[in-house]
Image (cartoon, one colour):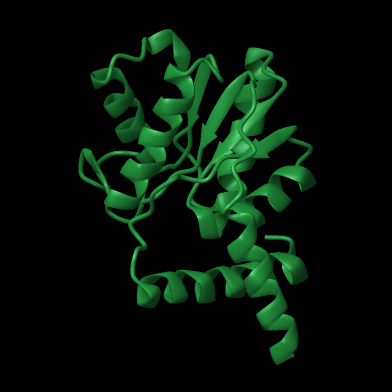
Length: 180
């Protein structure tokens, strides 16, 4: 069991260091916490990376995911959309969903938006250690996507990276055994 966890941890760690960004119809920016009308530092990194993909012309649409956290006044995706508008992205190039609360729900809602808008391909944006599981879910949902992890992360110290990796190992197994 220990060998399995070690190997899976290495796979997750290494996968998050690979940027597969290539021209696509849209970027799916996975939600993270928002505090009122402000994105958390982790979410802001994801939003900024989505904006960079948009500005370089790799994508023409941004899909921001994330609903309302417990007691939240704003959906994560609404916070991200406002951030993008403040940074010059036209409203017509921003799509949001406000119902999801998990990675799988983020991707399910993004897939529905893609279908409704005629978008076929995506670049998936999240934190490096989250990318492998998110891409696995995207594949299972038949979303043609490549991964583009944030080049910087708020998880900088070995302690915070280790905590995030342990969390990912847990959620990887939850998804593996329950499909949720």
